Length: 380
Image (cartoon, rainbow, N blue to C red; front, side, top):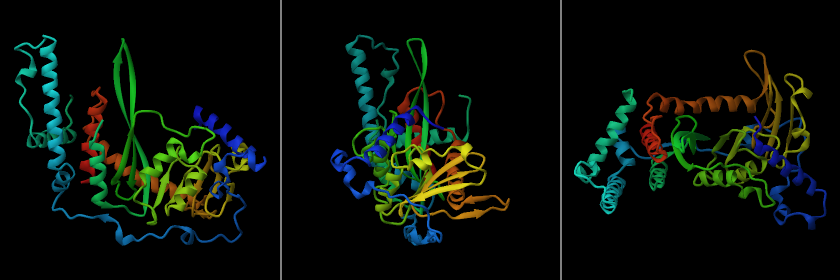
């Protein structure tokens, strides 16, 4: 579905197409780079096998990099004594600050709970973590430096398979202010292994992120910059990144391909550099089963009419058509995408089975912290 933001992006797409007919002196400097010239053309009658175009991947290099005797040892490797000591230190420091503030404001009473405070320790925190995990198994009625620590641990302990995906998780926190209740969203952008669901790297945002139209290089927009940062360390190893239409664009796909990372997913055809012949192709103008597409040699765009109009993008699939058991003819690109995203759902299903992230939690960083413990257990 289109979002209000898409109308703004559409205007940028039209401006980009219009400037291509103007003299070179009137174009932004960044557009003179060959990176931004796609030269769309019809697919060849005899397309190259997609295996020839796909980045080479060494299957022997994926999987765990460290051997452990059981999941518990993996978990305490992630949440090691160093990070637990830091958490204990900051917790005790915060308790001291609360007590001093209450003394300063003359509101510290003998019955105040802070009077019973005893400094916590890493061992006590491990017990607390165990209780949190147990609450996810036995459900009852009732800004982090930590992110950098977990990212390093997750990346050190696992080598990703060929197929990886950009996933997102949204934590809803209900907050009440001035007699009004509002939902605040904290979103986590995650690079996961499609086969196992292992979370390899993540980034947390509290503000809306998207493609913001401007006269600057589109690759500097928030979403492309975020994705290029998330895949750092995976370049030139033959991985394939699967994403949905919110993230994909021809320019981003080309940039990923140049970094040795293939890209596949659905596409919003109002993105910059999508040719108008596909942007203007509406559902009612197509018959069931019809396929339209163009290629620039390194990036393929395919629009297929099934029950709905579906636009897709790939850096290696081409326009291969397959026939399913039901006799339906469908681009191989779409079948592969549906299969891969279905496999990825296993991570969310596993996490939802043990919900230690309580809906009643109204403090966003507490809810996020609980989720980090949950994904650590999943990775372990």
